[in-house]
Length: 497
Image (cartoon, rainbow, N blue to C red; front, side, top):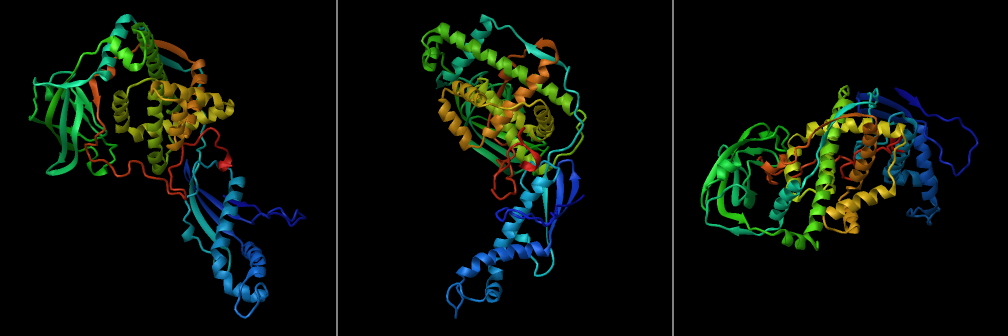
């Protein structure tokens, strides 16, 4: 596709910047990638040099002449190479800005352009090329009137009693015991992961609760309770685990490693009364604690409903989305997806141990999940634009307040932390997408299914990379600011204008 942005020579405001006579060729590499070739004619290049020399000549210092009195031709000859980079930078900035205003693609990243590889030739036109990620064009799937399942549950006093026992464990002290390890105890152990004779990962003095499953960051150890039950301080046990196909260590993806555990100590949860739990949380009465727990369980049910509904909507919307996404984009956004998931869990009142376990589960197939969710995002973005769905300042305040309550922190500190870690974009996407999901669910037909409340109780999460901890989990985008770009939001306009 060739685009000529030539303007007729017409009388204009002298302060108004004259457009470049660009020749732009855009080739579609994939649904989300464009390769752009730009050519700037010689007369425009000389115009930029002339402007620079107009400013330089009155200030130029040339031996044998007073400041600003050297002949222009001499100044141009002497300083042309020195101002070439400045001219190049200005031309690139102006031409990229002009391209963003005239092209019909919607950019979702900065141009992948190597400044040092661009040169202004001594003669003829200047040409440069870049790759850019863009929002894909696609036929909108049907999103109204979907048939969906939704988990339902009426919480009872028995449910709250079970949750109090679970909550008590979080506030209880762990006491060393001489007995053998049994279910729900904690084993303190050194962990070594080996592939053949090579040690690929190791951690010291890790605390793991004795549960049927241990979820590592890139593998799952089944039957952990049977493996360590009966063990005492000084014992050693081992098991083989399969590394996830999406592990960061590509050499070990899908391969088996041996996990060796040296038991250093066995600890048991000391009993804590409901009254003590209430006091540690800062609640005056058991009745108030039960009410708080009931509210927290309702929040977690809402989270489960949102996740179940979201998963069904995502599957339905992306069923026909067979366009490819750039691998670099997927790798960058996988980190954002983990951020979004953790933020949702914190907002819904999950404990840090539960979050680690769930995050490990997400991490194992994060690339596959990110591909589907990113496609879903583009579709939700289109719906948001068509239905004029936008975020409001109060939406941020509400979400931040909810996270602050769950983390027992102040909204001001939570907001500062989100801003410092660059997660406000993830929060914005969460708000917009949730509003669009609400639009979709408003017109959906629902069937109730049971809520699997204790599904996560069998898993202990551990932030341990069995294939080795990567030096850099998410590659940074190759752009001038050196930071990964945020997930393109609903406000993404034509070519990021």
